[in-house]
Length: 107
Length: 113
Image 1 (cartoon, rainbow over the protein chains, first blue to last red):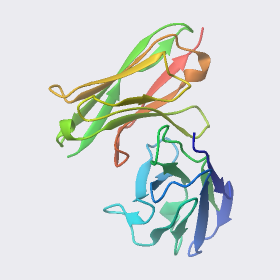
Image 2 (image 1 turned 90 degrees about the horizontal axis):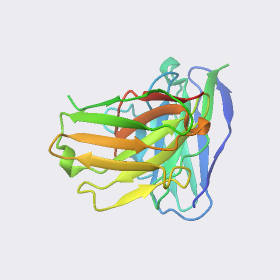
Image 3 (image 1 turned 180 degrees about the horizontal axis):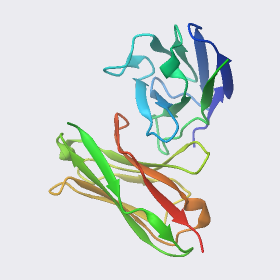
Image 4 (image 1 turned 120 degrees about the vertical axis):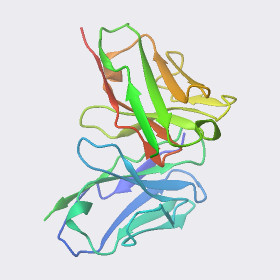
């Protein structure tokens, strides 16, 4: 099974900050990676798919990059509504594992 | 409006069974693969199972293999998860998802004596 790690696990940031979250896969997954945002008590929301394609309706301050084993999610200017937990998920092979999550909190 | 609505969650004793349903609307259900994902209290997301559009391909997480069965009825625009031999560690919010881009609100399963 492919394992995903995320760093950092927790991130404290201010409104307007540039934020970068890293997801690493235990083996190459090409560009078969998605990023989700989840707020407390809510279902996850798809932000990025195919490593770098922005889902329709998602603000352009979100961007994704990477391929193979290392991927990043960047929020160019953090907004109040972006404080949430972010997960990566590999879609290269079953089981479709998720990363452990990165919680973005208010500094 | 594209929508997924889960139902069927509840409190069940260890060893018991439960059947979750997911009703789809607003899109051509039969064209999409579907997934179940769960989240234990205070924990991260865990992929549970996937089924292809025509039910030809089915996959399970090792943690549920042999106990859970995913199925779908394209005529009824519905996805199901039959859960047997339930354990305390199956306690979670269960979400159905359309290939990751559309999610339901979740249904809560609690396994406790």
